[in-house]
Amino acid sequence: MNGDMDPLLIATGLSKRYGGRPAVDEVSLELWPGEVLAVVGESGSGKTTLLDCLAGRMRPDAGKVAYRTRHEGMKDIHAMAEAERRLLARTDWGYVHQSPDQGLRMGVSAGANVGERLMALGARHYGKIRGEATDWLARVEMDPGRVDESPRSFSGGMRQRLQIARNLVTRPQLVFMDEPTSGLDVSVQAKLLDLLRSLTRSLPLAAIVVTHDLAVARLLAHRMVVMKDGRAVETGLTDQVLDDPRHPYTQLLVSSVLQP
Image 1 (cartoon, one colour):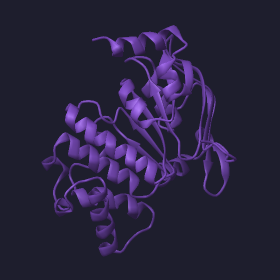
Image 2 (cartoon, helix red, strand yellow):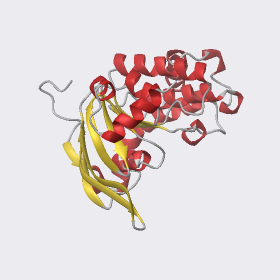
Image 3 (cartoon, helix red, strand yellow):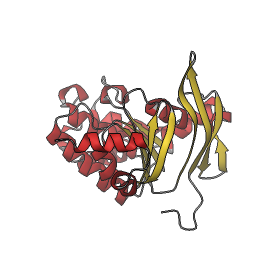
């Protein structure tokens, strides 16, 4: 996956505590351009806290997150000015929330939700913005004829597709996803996972996906990090980790999935 490229993101020694309890404890990882990395573990393992530290949404107590920007090379995201980090989040990055209602503006149309991200990049031509928004609805397998409808009129699965379109319309280098398929019916989950897999491979797009579902990790991710009590207990190629887990906790996770 890495070839001769440099990493897109490097996290070193990330730690975050709540009271006396470590939510993230000395976690280090690398992400390469075009790679999908899954962060897996049970509820309370520190997955989402780690994701928010990596995405600049939460400041770690210790450690560093360096991201390779398009024009200035590697930069410490937590040392950036707030305005610079916000611009990065609106343009070069995406963040897909577990609940699409958190990632959408429910008071504006589907097309406006997608078009807003283009306007953040300076787009001002209404026809072009609308055309791009309509194209992206089709790309995430939504009816383009619903471009003027409110997200409130969509099902949960369709809202999640709209949130994905909103995030990908700016062609970011990196998207963070927090349990993107949980809470959806199994059949809806399967279709959404197929969509995410085809999008990450065709764009190409680097992604960090938090999930408690090992099947999601296997389908989407090239590599995975297994979290337990805030620590990364195992890291490796996804198939390798799932087919031959080394850490007792990973073995327990895998065997529990395989139970009849």
